[in-house]
Every structure is written in C-alpha cells, then in structure tokens.
Length: 255
Image 1 (tube, rainbow, N blue to C red):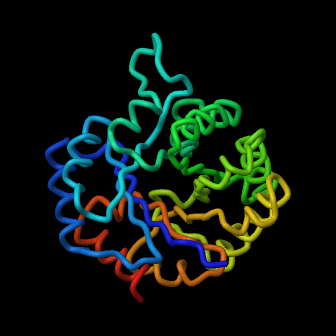
Image 2: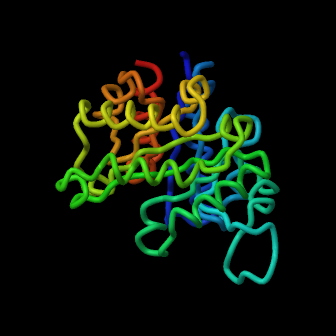
C-alpha cells in the first residue's frame, strides 16, 4: 500500500519565535513545492507556534505541536490544550515522546488520554514509542513496544485510528549519534505494523504511517526511507539547522 511519506522536525526547547519564524521561512523557500507523495511538518516550541504558522502560510509545510494536555480547558497552570493547539494552526501533535516519559513521568495511561484529546480536535497524533538501551540488551524490545502501542490505542475507533501516526524512537539512539541498523529498524517497524493489525484492524494497519526517530541525518535518511515499513522520520538535532534539514528532506523524499 502506498502511504504518504512524512518528515517532522522536532525543535524541542530550541528557537525563540523570531528564530523559528526565520528558519521556517528559510526551509519553506528552499524546498518550494513538495512531491505529491510527501508531507513535511515543523514542531516549534509553544511560544513560536503562531508566528511559525503565519510564516508557513501559502507553503505546503504543516505545523505540529510537541505536546498537549488531556483536558480542553481548566485550572492547569503551565499546560496547553488540544483546542488551543488547533486554533494555532496545528495539524499534528507529538505525544508520548521519550523525553516526556523520562523527565515528566508520563505513563501509558496518560499518553492514551492525550492521544484521545488530540483526536477529538481532528488533529493527527504522532505517538512516540521506544525502548531504552538496557531493555534492548535484555531482549525486552518487543515486549516494551507491544505494551506501549496496545495501551495507547486501546478504545480507539477505526475512524479515529486512521488519523494516527506512529513514531519508533529507540531511546538509546536519540541524540547519541547511534542509529539502529536498517535490519533492526525494519524488524521493529514490521513488528509494530503487526501489533497495530492485531490491536485495530488489518487493513487499517497497512495505512498507518510509521516514522523512525533516532539520530536521523542527511547521510542515513535515504537508506531508512527505502525500508518497506518506514514511512518517514521524526528528526531532532538534524532539523535545527535549516540547510541540514533541507538536505535531509531532499535526500529522503527526492532520491
């Protein structure tokens, strides 16, 4: 099945609104039109969402947020709701990122609630899952991933699940310079598609995009994108420099 490719820049806690706007414009200008089989999205920090959205007007690039609260509004100091993110122009919302799990104590149950909140606003959740190095070294990779996926998609309707994007980010490869081998990546992505088929529906699992996120660079994106179950990438460090990110996109989508 032909799934539309997707490359997402996760800028994490980098870039002021002015810097994000400048870099978004530079990326959009350098890329011009995108191939019809591909999407590209930028996920700036919250203060830069509105200015980045405005800078992307008239371009094919889409806006993503890095997190969302479970509730639409309320006394939750420091949080941002899914309706607010939609009003800022977001099409995608990252949820379950390993840094949120590790540093903010987010659980599978909380991530499931966030995923549901994002879907209620007709946005596409990018559900991040991945194993730590000690879990891989003790042969727990598939057990960990199976639990993370099944807990997150529990109770999803087929209609809702059709908006879902999955992102496999081996925690041991994020920001470390390490990258899983192509055999490891394809093995995990095929397993994830099988898990989705068992948890949701076989035909639906064939349509869901599965991204790879683990030290993706211009030098390795082409090889990753050629794998049958890799539909794109969630890019951290290599997305911070516009020239590097544009090179990565060209290598991944045009080669």
